Amino acid sequence: MKKIPIILFISLLICLLCAVTRSGYARDVRGVTKDTIKVGVIIDQTGVIAQGGVPMVNGVKTYFRHINDQGGINGRKVKVIVEDDHYTIPAAFAAFKKLIFKDEVLTILACGGTGQTLALARQIETHKVPVIPYSCAEAITTPLKRYIFTSSASYDDMIKVPIDYIMKDLKAENPKIAFVYPDVEYGKTGLQVIEGYLSKYNLKLSNKTVINLGEIDATSQILTLKKSDPDYIILHTVLGGLISFYRATKRYDLRSKVFGFFYIGEEYNIKATGDAMRDTIVASPIGYWGDNTPGMTELREITKKYQPDSERKTLYYIHGWVISAICAEGLKRAGKNLDSDTLVEAYETFKNFSTGGISVPVSYSKNNHKGGIGNKLYKVDVKNQTFIPITDIREPAFKD
Image (tube, rainbow, N blue to C red; front, side, top):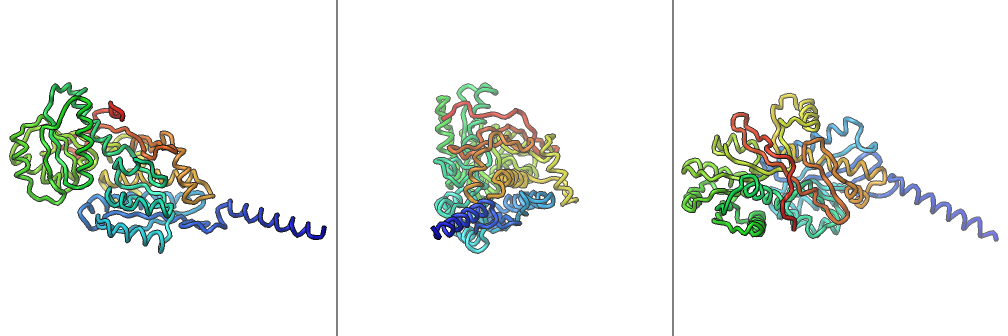
């Protein structure tokens, strides 16, 4: 009988310890203390896509600076730690290891490009690191990966919406459609998607042309394209590749109407290519600096507060902002009891989460970690060096 009080005491102590652990303060959780949350970022700062990676990081840092000045998230301030992967897989692995084992971050944003994210997928799952990648490739979330969430529609969806527009809005009959892409995983995946989607309309590509990311002169490719005389060109590339494409199309007067998405829709491209982009239409789940939406108005005000000399921020900056807004909302919903799994569970409660019109609303579930399938179509405004919307939110006409 004398042992009963001891047993009760031990039981009470265990209960108290469990209660403290559930409060979120006494546990040893990677990247989380009573007053700090560590968030990592892996993105190119000095390599071939640094032109996108640098403003993207600026967007992340500005967003969380604002959040911290508002008191943080559930009483914790967010510390952002950035690692440069030079757009290479080995550097991405090194950055990941540093962020997890040395800096001990809770979550990672961007995580390099498509190849880097896919290469790191096993490590992400093994170490239970919630990630919102920079890339929106379909393969990143299909099949489902517990700790990986993309911020929007996939590149596949962005390819499909322009095809629907050509066939349904422009009412094209037996159009000749060409595809321009880089000979990397990103480009080859896009080729498979467009060939499959065109088959829904009983169409085939009239031409397939490779222009690689670092290619300076695309003369031979454009001359070959011109001979095939396509009605429409789907341009599936980024940065250097697209600038070479547009400069050559202007030089050799290739008049096919060009459609692209997201990376094509960066305002810098208009400045770099002059009026060569004048007829281009792009699909994007993310809006532009000049958009008249509540969220974009707030984004401009906050940005100018911290960067008073800013005149215009790029699509990459806005993408960083959107990823950060998704992360912050997940951290908020996870509450005090924050760890990798409660953050994942918080993301899975998103249903049409609104960024105030900065992007298409974001939804997740336990069985789907892709942010959505909707995009808007935008056309180039050469005079104002930007893109303006020509449609509302659209989803692919054919669902797989």
